Length: 77
Image (cartoon, rainbow, N blue to C red; front, side, top):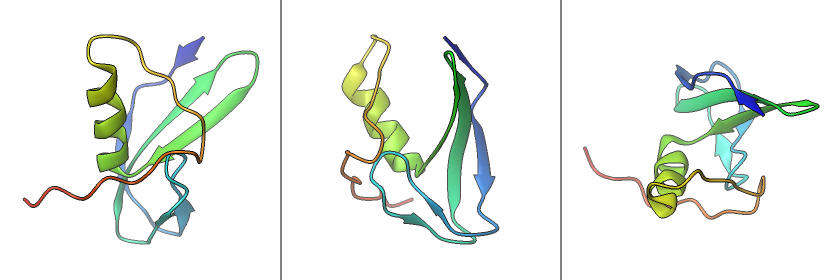
C-alpha cells in the first residue's frame, strides 16, 4: 500500500468528506491524499475529521471505513 503526501486545499466545488460524509463546501479547507493498494482511492476530509482519526490512533497506523465516521466539533482558533 502507498499513500501520497497529504495536501491541504481550499475547495473550489462541493465535495463529500470520506470520513463523516458531510459536505465540504466551496471555500472550506480540506485534506486530500490518494491511497494505492491494487486500486486507487482519493480521500478528502475535513481537517478536524483527519485530526480526530490520527488522535484516536495515537502512535499506531490508522484505518477508517469511508463515510462511517462522525464529524467532531471544530476547534475555535
